[in-house]
Amino acid sequence: MRQLVRVICCTAVVTALTACGSQGPANSPSNSPSQPSVFPLTITRVGGIAGFNDVLVVTSDGLVSVTQKGKAQRQCQLTPEAAKRLTTAASEVPWPHLTPGNTTAAFPDDLITMALSPSGGPVRVEDPLVGAAGPIFNELVNDLIGGRSASGMCAPV
Image (cartoon, rainbow, N blue to C red; front, side, top):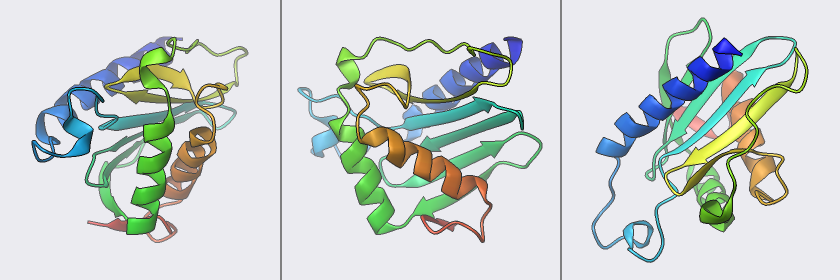
């Protein structure tokens, strides 16, 4: 439980720090007053039998910061196709209408994957309101956790 609280607090700090430097052009659609930006998008995976503690922070330009338990933080750049898929999926989530999800494990080895946006969250990616974006968020986490050379969605920076 303390580890989960620590991950959520770290995620909030990373999101706040990333938000300071990830503003796009003033006339970009993601910064329009009528539609809040979904970036930086933070995806966390904690728990499970393996004791995962992974945090991905994706900026609007496709730069991804990857933090894993016991490893040095690294960055990569989403491929154009992956960036388009993720941006489309994240923009289709009804962030302002989401009720922050239950972020506590249902049992000791529960694996929890959550998404957090400046527009809403955190929410478990399997929440029905997340819809088709959930599998895309999971695909990104699984792809990037394999390491730099194994990723097909993100090139090292």
